Amino acid sequence: MVHAELDRLQACLNFALDTLRKEMDKSQLPPLSQHSLVEHPLDDPTTYLPSTALFEARRLSLACLGELKDLVQTPLDKRMDERYTAYAAVCTDTLIKTGIIDYLSDVPNSSQGVPAAELASRFELDSQKLVPILRCFAANGWARETCDYSFALNRCSRSFIKGHAGRRLNLFMPGFMSMVESIPSWVMESDWKLSRSPAQTPFQIAFKTPLHRFAWVMEHPHALIPIADHLQVHGDMSTPSVVADYPWKQLDTPIIVDCGGGKGGLVSAILDAHPSFQAIVQDTENVVALTSSIMEERRPRDVENGRLKVEAHDFFQPQPRIGNDYSFILRHIIHDWPDDEAVGVATILGNVARALGPKSKILIVDMVVVPNVDSTATTNAELFLLDSDVKRVDYSVPSHFGSASKIVNAFSVHMLTLMNGCERSLPEWETLVKGCGLCITNVYPLRAHTSIIECALDTRASP
Image (cartoon, rainbow, N blue to C red; front, side, top):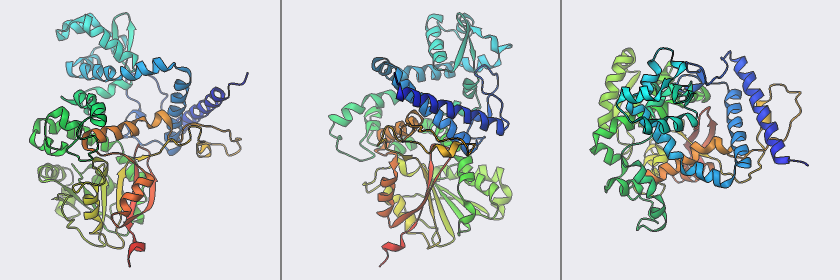
């Protein structure tokens, strides 16, 4: 009996894992182990950038594992997995907020684990509640139950320790679950079901406000810090790849303007790698005061000699930096907003487009959705082959890499829920920029979930 799909996926997974192993050896990385007491370099994309072949081997491995799971798991089990996913996230959040994760990281002989009864006593909790939470946490790959009722952190969960990037990717805030729960009625029954306004989404329903998300945050400063932390880590995850995977030396403009540049982390990394550039960080009034103090502390010489400037600018207003001296970065800005709103993408992108000179570029750093048109699309396996003499095998996985693209597609629904925004496919990006008098000159895939969509003035549109 021929098990064609199973055999093909097994061969693909073996190939991906073999490539992963070879690339790790080539990069002199330590073996992966969930029993390790230290984080692996690959665990933090904000500080370590893998080789392209290693990045793609990981992505292909995840795609194969997802396809294999879909092939062998029963639909009812899959549905139950889906339904109870929220509990896994809540368990992680609970263990962070109680302080249990930090405690488990500090105890002597932490690999041996700590009894749940000791944790319950130490944090004045009910052990009967704590044990199911810890076991759910462990079942989702974040901890080990070293013996009955005793738990230890594993390598991956160390990302949740205070001061680490995973800790700042806060999963929940008050009202989040209400927002998620309101999606079906919002789509099917509400007065807003045909609205694409950023002020008529599940966010307004859950938070009982007429304000769109960003306006609400400005009126609730207690929410600003955790949201800003989350967004900064989300951006930092792509920074090493943005710096390494875009050909910055080909830019003909001496000054880079980061629109909505936050604390200036991206332009700092670009300036470190490419000293010939100057940079400007633009953001709202309430952000630039903090950014200015950070830059004065970390890059005093650049601030003093004018190589780095921080200025207040609302990207819904005309862009003041005009002409051939400037190229612009819009990172994780466009996906927040719908296409056809008066206060939306057309306004933001149009304001920058009108400031461009013939040599200027707009670099949109955002996700590019790949539709799963053909569920047996063949990946470009030659990219990963380390030995050119190896005979090519038909490694078929979804064209959007299946489970490896879950983050992209879930993020699109998240943007829809918050602001009526979305992640866009390449044809959608082309339509969007064309409406602003621009054309896409290139797309640079990154070793991250995002790409750089390079745009310039569309000279073909000129009379």
